[in-house]
Amino acid sequence: MKNLFILGNWKSNKTMTEAANWLEIFSKNMPQIPGHVSVIVCPGFIHLPLFSSRTAPFALGVQNVSAYETGAFTGEIAASMVANTVSYAMIGHSERRKHLGETDEVVAEKVKRVLSVGIRPVVCVSDVAQAEKLAASVPEFTKTGLILYEPLFAIGSGKSDSPENANIAAGSIHGILPETPILYGGSVTAENVRGFVGTEHITGVGVGGASLDAAKFLSLISAAL
Ligand code: 13P
Image 1 (cartoon, helix red, strand yellow):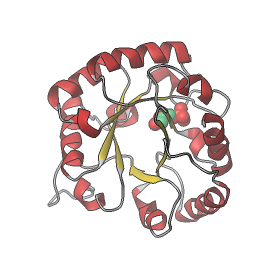
Image 2 (tube, rainbow, N blue to C red):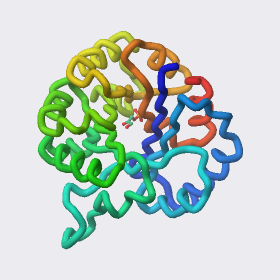
Image 3 (cartoon, rainbow, N blue to C red):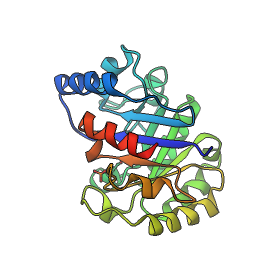
């Protein structure tokens, strides 16, 4: 059976209390997850101790890491600092590319840092060219990496891409990275998730808004199974 990845990206949201409430509801109600399905939650860095102190029924990820190793880089979180805590790291989300000036070169550096400490990178791309640059600059990405394809117009807009279009883009990315799992992101909900995971080239979804409410995220997971 085809693997399935369901990744929740909390972005810059939730106090510690809100995160604890979410975790309480989610853990109590999480359905039995078949072995071929990976649920990944990417909360804020501040929430990691809360999540890792409990036997959470999902994998943990971060939304970013530093492009540098440990050292004199005030405010940065190096990949090695979270290597024992998380299994995945999102890199190059379009919001970071847009608001924080993250370039393809910076993305490549971050991917190298993550790979060197055994974390699986989930590289976010909004077009095929970004995937092409990644494949050219970090060929070792193909061993363990994942691509999260998120067309810009679909992020947070309530207007997802069609599964057909998303599958065509994912097919083009597979032309460059044939072994890499490709997730679709952009206004994924419990109502539309099946359409995406049922396509040939899409092996999962990245979920922003609909992952913030534990009950909504649970419905989405159930709908995707
Ligand atoms: P939305 O699901 O809120 O559109 O966000 C998608 C996203 O950016 C996930 O990384």
